[in-house]
Image 1 (cartoon, rainbow, N blue to C red):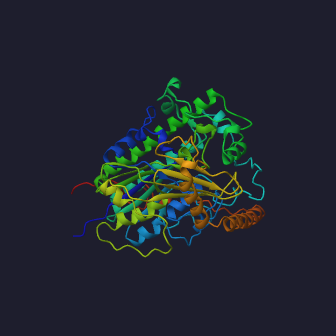
Image 2: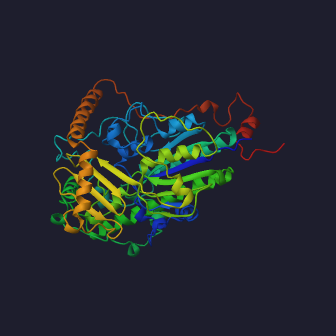
Image 3: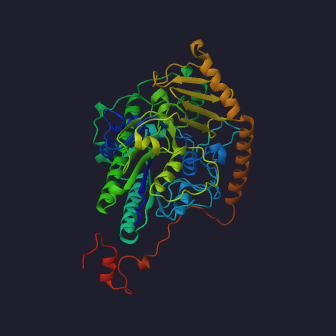
Length: 509
């Protein structure tokens, strides 16, 4: 009898910097469920997003390709249905695939290979949030980040984010139970939550896990004239340069963020418990990650949209059958998830599918199963708001290099300067390293061509969006199908049969 391939449960947070989790060593933030997975699995300590913004990062993660390969530039870029994702490949390999929660798909295809989607999304699926690189300094107040999320942080009984994540967890658990009752094939579920993304508003029971006097303040602060060129634009764009937060507001926002990290961690616990209840915990590889991080006041920056460590790094924890215990410091990134999942699915001998497009990542399974690092790297690209030129990051070995046309380059020795306080790009001692990175940027990317395409795609989408605001409204937002007449107990069914179909474990007869 052929052994069943491992299930995959990927649990994704939104805007979770690993530095603000107990699992990665924060002395205050409570993440017991993440801690437990890290203790029995592999923790990747240099994992990065491929673009520090929600939609581009998620499209890259799904496709295993960098954002310039699939034109996933910003939060209103269309994710073409012709781009194969890990959900497509796993379906080819016999997996049931489902998505519960946020993926920020833009365009009429709201599945992208998932067999089922059990919730709607939380953000618009149309072209409303298209930036304009021909006016890169212009704020779009309707959806650009500003400092309100910091200044209005606090406690609430409910918010749209809390409602969404409660739904995500409930329907994810329900789907796992459904798999247990009705499917013998392996499954891949993505449960994607919006916390701890701003606005920084938390339920009281999580806020009260922390006292205000234990909330640490940002370790490094920079005045506006001390910032690098891109950081100045970020501060202007989010109005941090004109409406700075007070120390009390900063501490309060971090307090609420920590609370929401613990809230997200509680959802990890719920899903792990469900796996245990259905008897699949020992045959499921669990992956914990996020789409990007959050500066949370470090360097006087907030949110994401840059490649500093708190914004560009993500948690990456794997636990389950065959996964070794330990930590890996080798750079890796979200594009590595697709080939990793394919490796998991093929671990019992199932043939790997032919990739429909070149894949930019490599499988993390050799590192996850051996505990030994490789010589891989992490590549980042940012082509969204608050810039008028592409921003690139190369993280390789001990170093990180950041380039944007018109800005002074940044080079940091992450191993010896993890806070990125000493820019070595112009240091004589690092001239050879800096020059090599600069040459690699020039050979890897055609910035003029990319910028031209970004602007062309922005114009395209703006024209479509403006037209769709006229006449009869047609939305792409996902409405999960539901047939209430066949749920629970109805007059055309025997209630005892309905009870038996949904009971797990089933009665022994």
